[in-house]
Length: 174
Image (cartoon, rainbow, N blue to C red):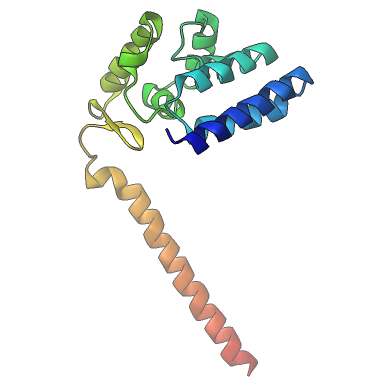
């Protein structure tokens, strides 16, 4: 990691600490959210974010951000799983870009392996890690994209009708 980025990250973390000392949890949450967006695979940032959510009593988010830590409680994990019922949904909202199993402690690794197994049972295919995070191993068929294609076609038709109507209105006005 370049030194400039590490210094910027350290500055933001110092601001988070200063916010928390003043009792300002909301700006601290926003700063940690920005950092975890910039460094999605930094498990220490995730742990810090989970700790903050734990302090403010948000069990769902504490479970979400603490999912990869050993400190996450069963209550937090259960709240997270209840809020995001599908395994694929949970994989996506965890916002992890790489398979972190090798970096995790035993409890967190077990949770991740169980979640991947659940996602694979839900289908449509085994989990594959990409730069965009976990994705189905095999691409979905064109039939799975049919609703989006129909919506796009309908949008094009509506825009064409709006253009014809506008053109007719302008000609009528002259």
